Image (cartoon, rainbow, N blue to C red; front, side, top):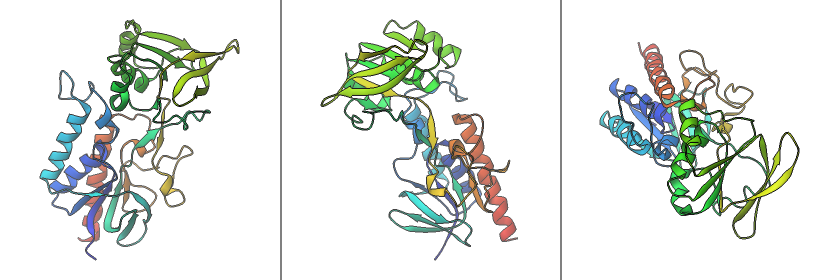
Length: 307
């Protein structure tokens, strides 16, 4: 057994940034990612709020550059999904679907996944009209009429991209107003393809072989009606990818990993970074910050182990 110095779980902005810093510290570093590195940013069509790119940059391109930079400093990428671990062990033991890995320290950067609506028809029609990714599935709905659920930043950003392909978008938001940033609201309100159902909740997604309609209810009047649509795109928040840590590390009531200011979790030598960490703001810039701090904290921890 020849353990890694730092083993990073998750290949989004936080994980790749941690890999860059740990690699530059001349450590033996590997990153475990079940899919392609990049996280949710890789499926974002355009990023305008990451510093250094005055006209913005494609999400996939940004993450490709981060990955290439991390590899330049010796990062090894392992294709697997961590399902369990012995986090207090020395070295730490990470158990994946395809193997077992050992490391002196670990950085958890597993990110988040789209939150489900949990209404009838959602799971039944997933992949048959129900989607959580405009970049992935938007082109399949060319000149179609679709329903979008969610008026926050993600919902509006994805909807604006979706509007390139579809004929019309009915945007459903349970709040009585859009909650996205003002600049995004202005763009969507000026787009003639949009109509809005505010103060409206989704009761079910309906169809036979594929999505045909959505049943909604006005939260003020209680009126129930059906709106037609060839597809439903859902953006109603995120949930942390941390279920495999329940009972092992301290999580907050919503399932996010609790850390101190050094990104250390309730277990010494185990750190968390990015959207999976309990914090107030989840952006690419905050993920990069977390990854930096987590890696530097891991370096200091290793120095105390081997003075």
